[in-house]
Image (cartoon, rainbow, N blue to C red):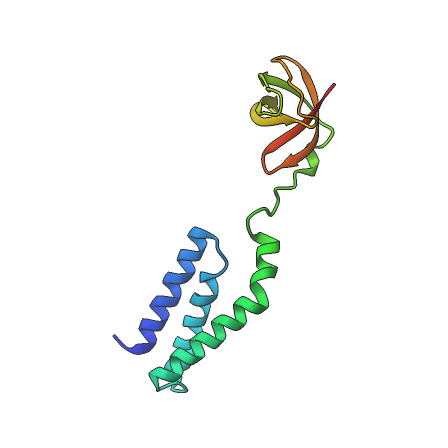
Length: 142
């Protein structure tokens, strides 16, 4: 197998790995490997040491220039600010202990919940969603 095919296979494998793990780090290694494969294929990078240097520079530049933007747009926590839930009424389906978590029924399913002030709420009590932390609903008793 030729050198450019090794680089291309590594690039595709790394990009697939990033799709699976969602780190937005391995993605840049994969893209850098594909750029290196293209440059080797065109004959611009015949020297293996130069190939590794270009790979490292392109990967570092990608991470430094674009990773933060991608994480902000698509990474962990993106879309976890469920503003559409704020102000909605819920029913406590599993006792919420003082300074603890229980479950509430909302939109046909159960969600983990805690109270804003740390008070306890019994099953059947009604609450209003005041804040979200991921999928944890922070509620206030009605």
